Length: 120
Image 1 (cartoon, rainbow, N blue to C red):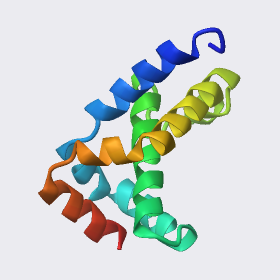
Image 2 (cartoon, helix red, strand yellow):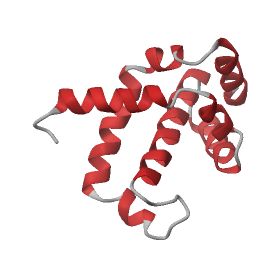
Image 3 (cartoon, helix red, strand yellow):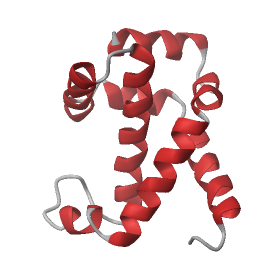
Image 4 (spheres, rainbow, N blue to C red):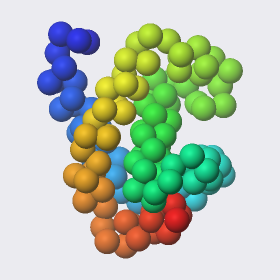
């Protein structure tokens, strides 16, 4: 993967952009989403940082599911700690943190307000 960082970054950014919609807001309202958002509130001092971390969590969950695992699957831990997943997650994290303003701009004004309210 290190041989093609630009291609991976473009693919990763496209993946993240496609996730910036009502599904993100709906996920934030699920039990799992609420638990993670509450954790973000405890460790991240600003709403901006909380939302950024939540977007990373949201995309990580769907990336895991795209690999054929659910977050409740006992094998998910093995996948989540595998070198390949860690490399993918690292790229995902970099992409989200470097492009957060672009990603956030893909939400409608109403979606941004809802997410900010959930993270406040």
